[in-house]
Image (tube, rainbow, N blue to C red):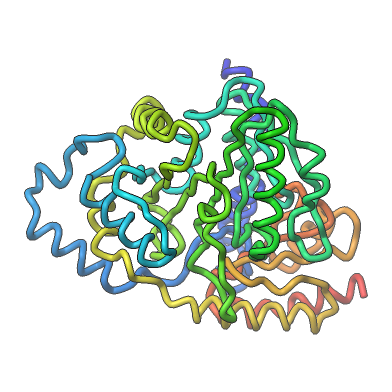
Length: 395
């Protein structure tokens, strides 16, 4: 018999993964070219050529025993952590050192490390809907309580009035994700400043430390010159989680980092806890070869013009069909208003046309659906006649 905690997690397993598996099933029946799978945020743009070059150089130049061995610190190679800190300082005018960086097994591993380090059973973790559904599972891993802020469906900026009301003496962590999955919205600097002011006020009111975790796997995927604020500059108790999954198209390699600035309360203690959490959660250390690769490719990026072309084509195509959606500023998702209140019913109707989309309730925002447009341009174009057929059922 499985653990009691796991029973509920299994019962509510990821709808995104389930839809992706359904896509594989349908592809075997109808042919992959006739199935339009918008379920999974799996980058379809190849990693930069520099990544391939770095792999070969490292395999040729490095001592293989050292390259594939454990790192001296669970936080990662010292030179890699220093390289990350230097890059961030150059880009954002920060003043980090290598000691402020913890190399992690992707952003997901990083979030688990920092939540393990910070929260006690019963502590509250606030997330702004719509949010990545795994935040709930990550919080449950450590017996925390996830508190949702309801979605602002006008522009999908956070509802700061509700946020202020829901912060309590038990609030330990606030998670923000910008550019956002599933909306593609970037939280404006004005929003971040107001959010920081609310948190500062509540820390003083309750005499507690409230940590802001900025989950940033999509930071590099922005369009039309939009700027993404770097949150450590606005609120002292900010910790950043980053992943190279999207910026270098390396989702399966599981490599990212945490930034824990000196300004964070008891930062040395938090860093020590993150070091230990990396080990006792079973990660031990982030993949060593990948650490060395990203250090060599620190300033490389994938070509997001492919995503941008898909964004424009899908956004305009769905609008022409009569669907309503906000134009994403970043990431590679389109969040579309369902033409019926029960968006799961709409997802089921879409599947009749081999269109696979994810219900917004998976992101705590029912009434909407998410489409991941990190697919081939041909998939976008060939799907539009099917969306037009689907639209005829509703408009």
